[in-house]
Length: 259
Image (cartoon, rainbow, N blue to C red; front, top):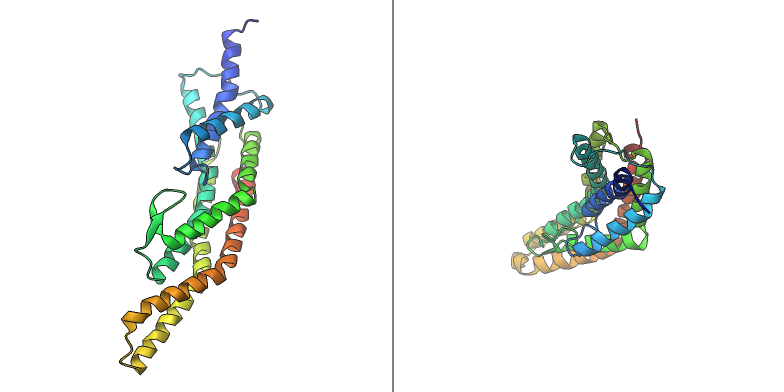
């Protein structure tokens, strides 16, 4: 059996271009983009999914590897994958915003642990929220839903020189304001309750001058914050699931729609 140069080029292109988009998604996607996940594992997942998708996708355009069109095609595949993965990062960002606000309100701003997603130091409350969110992602198979959307993206935006329009980028930037809104909604019950607790401690100090507010204020605030986190945790995770459903719907209805 012999193959011509054009046939070999078509076979390689049908596998290589989808692999670029899939790899970009895994780099930007939470959990799979975790620095603690081995690069070999990411590469193997990318390779396996690309091998499964290549036979069912439309044939890619035949272009010279060192041509300008090849560079544009690669750029489009990377951008589409990165945007889809970054969209989920914004939902996790809302948890980071909530954790930062709660942690500093509980006087735990200096107590930091490594972010399980990005590997950077964050308040311990943020680490708790992000770790639970990662477990919810895996339990609800949301990572599989995103991979399904990735497969749909090849139908809407097949491998070609053109891809996402500038309007899609502005829509994603506009949705970024929701990240702070959702984070504020998650944190406000705890932040407001601890603020009232601080006010109550201030009145106690005024009523009894011998009351050592600095000696007992921190333990009271810390204990109250821990109780509030425990009480509000189901509501916070419910808001996270709703936000995740909203961003997946946004990807499906706004980003993966050719105008």
